[in-house]
Amino acid sequence: MASPLNLGVANNKHIENAAYEIDVNYLGVIRLNNIFMDKLKSRKEAAFINITSNFCIIPSLIEATYSSSKVALAFYTVSLLEHLKIAGSTVKVFDLIPPHVATEMTSERNDKKISTEEFVKGLIKGLTKNQNLIRVGDAKIVDFIKRLFPKTAFRPINPKKANEILE
Image (cartoon, rainbow, N blue to C red; front, side, top):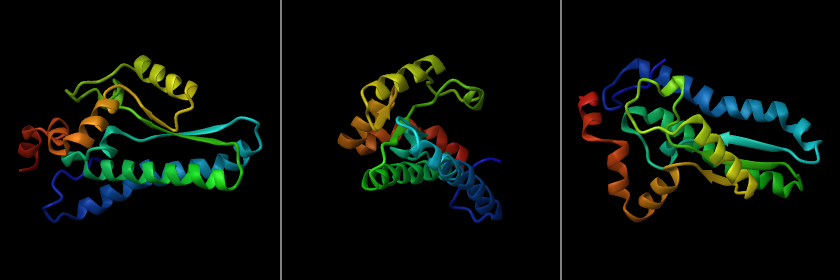
């Protein structure tokens, strides 16, 4: 199931594809967290690690629903962390924000990617530092540039070739 390419053109497939991506990327994580919640709460040390994306920092025009699902997950993750703190739980919550990782899912992309090894090293480093927000690879730079130069940060994620795909 592919993302809708042009949200500006009415198409019944958009809602179907959007529902699928939201179901997998957002609701699927909530379902899994609910399944493991009591088990993790019963442990001395436990954690949820929710994986969002650079696209929750800067949206992708050609992956609008994917970006939206990752933003929803990022907000959910912050809320989960705070709810567990209020409840007095020792369960930790981490939001892992990677750039593109070289996997089968991204094999057809020409974008810059990090290796799975670099991804895991970044995760371990963030967990060791007990950072609730773990930015791996270019995610650190993307977030920094977005804060200072929002329009500049938007362009590498959405190059002019993206416009050609949407036309």
